[in-house]
Amino acid sequence: MSKPSSLWEYANPVRFLAVSERILPALWVLSLACLGIGLAWGFFFTPDDFRQGSTVKIIYLHVPSALMAINAWFMMLVASLIWLVRRHHVSALAAKAAAPVGVAMTLIALVTGALWGQPMWGTWWVWDPRLTSFLILFLFYLGYIALWAAIEDPDTAADLTSVLCIVGSVFAVLSRYAVLFWNQGLHQGASLSLDKEENVADVFYIPLLVCIAGFVLLFLALVLYRTGTEIRRRRARALRARSALA
Amino acid sequence: MRALLLRDLQLAFRAGGGFGLSLAFFLIVVVLVPFSVGPAAALLERIAAGVLWLGALLACLLSLDRLLALDWEDGTLDLLATAPLPLEAAMGVKALAHWLTTGLPLVVAAPLFGVMLQLPAQGTGVLVLSLLLGTPALSLIGAFGAAITVGVKRGGLLLSLLVLPLYVPTLIFGAEAARRAAEGLDATTPLMMLAGITAGCGALMPFAAAAALRAGLR
Amino acid sequence: MMPDLGKYAQPVLWSYAASIAVLVVIVAASLIEGRRVRAEMRRAEEDRDV
Image 1 (cartoon, rainbow over the protein chains, first blue to last red):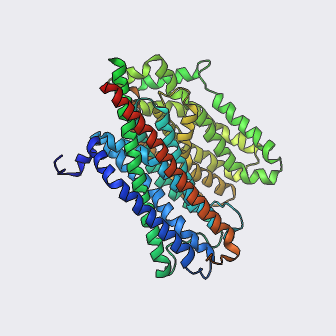
Image 2 (image 1 turned 180 degrees about the vertical axis):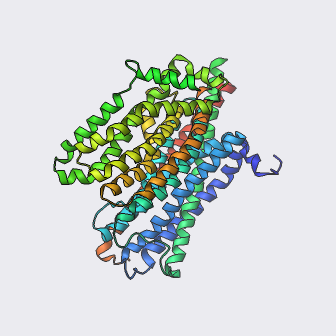
Image 3 (image 1 turned 135 degrees about the vertical axis):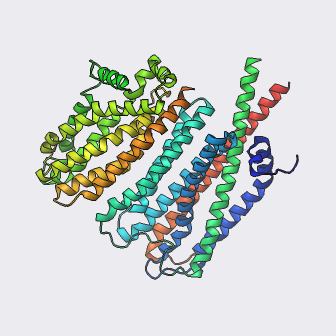
């Protein structure tokens, strides 16, 4: 196969599969290594925070997962736009593949966020703006996945879920501001302050970067692998349909 | 366009057309709330504004699957898609018809239900205004949701799952406006945000709904 | 080896446990489904070639 001259040539399913098969093994190893090193480093080898005690260790899970929860949706948005404009099936399938990973990230962000706040707030859940926004994002993900599952024709499903993703993105941003507005009246005291701490010392920051890298790489590995699954699923279905007609 | 609107209104007012059902549902919700939280006037007074908004929202939601389902079944939708009237305009008209038969009655009934839920009198005006400004958004978003799920058998639950998160900003600002007024505070900011959301929905939702419908009809 | 987590041991440990569990589930589910679909595609291709 000749060297591709532009990124668009990876939109070809066969080429996509060829390339992803080549880089996936390394990607898996690298992501698990970063995760392992980052989390172990953060858990075992960082000091406690002056104010928050050992709960600061939760940032190594909460920050990367929260970042990925949002980035996953953003990637789905871009993939949806590419599908609607250029009709590359790989793009539509990549969006479909990314959604459950986004759900997992959002779930981790929610659970770690709630647990992080528990010592501060005394309850296992509070309607803090950040947690509430992630909860809404979680619902958007669920709706997106449910829609894929409900439509039989793959191209129609791709179209409808793409439109949903775009509309959902607008409302997700809108909801973020609405929730901030809604939460004003609550005087809760300290809220979840993350990497925007007054001074995020290197001793915390570097393991955090490693963890973020780990989550990003894991997301990439999962999406590439799952997109490959979707491509094969589609191909198998097409082959079965053709032989049924023959 | 007018013909489409009149037709939809006629269909809604016919027996079995669903008009009045939303209102009845709203009433039922209002009746059920004191049963679930207790009849203490002090409590009801504090939650009345929010409950009324929630009830109105749910009543709108429940009538959404009628928006397109009947036209889908008898083939009218295919006709609409190929008619000279732009599909975007048709979706706008459908949303308007839905609002006239569902949202508007709720707006009119709200003061009465407010009394039943001990809504402070000073809040009634803004409650009505917020519902007036916000329920069109609910119909527009609902039209989009209906278009997305138009081909799905028994898609009512999916419709709710898709539409309810989209309702969150409208609900937040609408209920907040009503709540502030009930407490005697100034409600201008949330009302303006609400108006902005409805205006935005009016501009965008018909296009999104038409796009979804074209995909679903193929 | 285990750091002294003090009074926050519960939230911290549960955070790590839950997060790792979710990651394990999504990776495992993806791999299991992936293997099944790849086998299905191989079968479909074999049937076609036969």
